[in-house]
Length: 187
Length: 179
Image 1 (cartoon, helix red, strand yellow):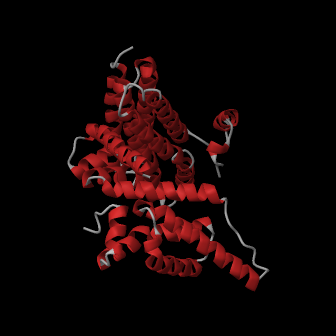
Image 2 (cartoon, one colour):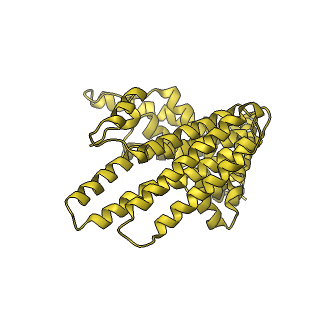
Image 3 (cartoon, rainbow over the protein chains, first blue to last red):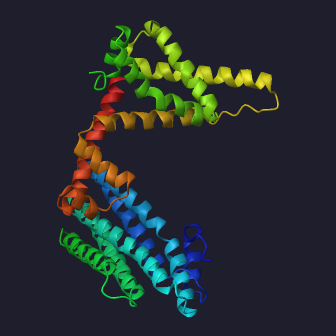
């Protein structure tokens, strides 16, 4: 079973990622990327308090989103490993397990949309000196949401067009639009 | 009236013998007293209930001795801590094997005080503000879900939450000035 990735040093995590044994994959990396992005948004919001009334509120929201993203770093790998085992053993529970393994990347996609939206707001209203950090966070959040959209689609290939897939697509699209807005908000 | 009254107004109503005000006073501070006993002094449930009864009996008897009506909360906190310490001392005499466990007092009491202040300030916010903060911070709802549930554009939720947090902060800062 994969260990608690957030307790590893960055170097140990990279080693686990590169190892051929079961461990962190795209889902865990996407969730971790989101947590980093939310951290960047918090930093920019905190540094914007002198010039923006809503900065403290934005920082509090970014911290809440960071916590949500961090919670998704480990379990996503667990569920995917279960689905993989069911696929190899042609288990009758395969569809249920695949669906469950699609729900976690869906949560990542939805948190990704929120981080990107908040990053765009902070890029627009925050201190100009740190605007590029907020825009970077929005782009990272978009990437995480798109990765998650792909993972949802992969996990649902046995079924027909699914509500989960549509929700993931909509979240990735929201994140894309927010990132474009953040990038356009200035230097 | 009692429900919306400030602490000082509530104390005045209690002194005047308003029964509804007494009920509100117990309702308003019951969680606080209970939290001091269970979290600050690690008391078991039935001991915390005894403390609760004793605290409010003393409040009832001695309310006239309170000099500053707006200081009801620190006064209740002090009463509760004293009663908890008395009970723990008494039980350690009866059963010396049991170790008296008091957690890192000042930190826990400061956190309880802060949590209680936030809880009170939240109650003073408008219903839409309270709702949106509860959905985002307590229920972990996404901006999209909040927007759909409240029939608001999802793109405006983050700003709305920031404004509501700003109001909450003003209320909390107002309390610190009053205290």
